Image (cartoon, helix red, strand yellow):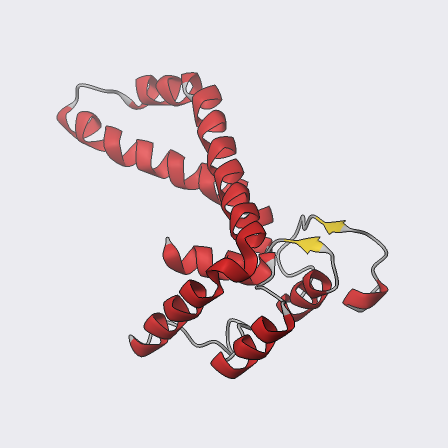
Length: 163
């Protein structure tokens, strides 16, 4: 079933799948008072967990090559780290959503900084606003004049570029 952002009768959308909601719909929903992150934010736990696991395995690879750590010992160590890895992942996810909440709360106070950031990325060939569904400089100026800051979905895209 597909519906438009304006037909959603919820205040918050938490996306459990990639591209379950289009970026345009996330933005429209956000501009009409809804709260919706990008799918990359809502689904970052699994990716973050895999990243942490891979980084730990890379860190342990040297000891394995030298023979001072066997594969069974490494696997046991990884299993023992499960809870700590989970805590790190949850903390990272919390910090990402907190960053979005703070940026959204600051709203128009930061829009000039956000505009300069997008312009700097474009100048380096790192950002295509149309591809990322980000407002053009003219559209951003219009939104600022109407008192409409960037949505959480748009801020999520900028957060990814900032990282």
